[in-house]
Image (cartoon, rainbow, N blue to C red; front, side, top):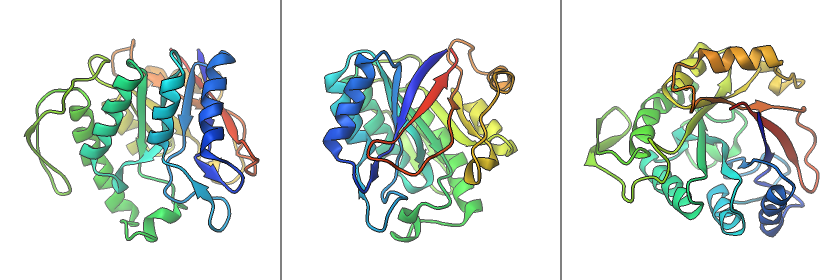
Length: 249
């Protein structure tokens, strides 16, 4: 079991320098990972300050040498998989192999979807996630990728340099474990960032037995598979909001 912090990417009283400082302090305090939310417009307040997680993580990478760095969770349907892969691979090299990316359909309450004309229909976003997941995992392996799909295309391209990590930068899938599609996607990736449907009402933690069942259900290499157990209910955002995250290894 390793422990990481999930940190807000914005809010009324948070500064980007404070986020970088939190990441550095997390390593000094003995935490094993630092994971940022990924929103274009944060969910708290009317016009909250919001910061790009990959730029913040790049800054944290320059001040740390041990903690794993990533997002929980990036809404893949509002990103171009190739651009996201380039950002993740760059972080992988900046951090000497400490990058991880978690992807999902996206928060239903994400104001950055409709505000910028992004797809809001859940079934379409799910289809984009399914297709984009294959493309993303392929590009993060450094292998040459050919993909002709409904939403994305890659004509025999490979992103260089290849990842520091082998066989690729770890990809986790986020979502409710009560949805069969989430488990199915996680089986194609390297881990799962699970929550229960009560996440949108009152927080309910996973028990150790439930986490063990999730990990064992992933048919990937047992040396790579992970289940990220998110603890403590979501509070009202304070100046520095963090959540405890446990990653069985």
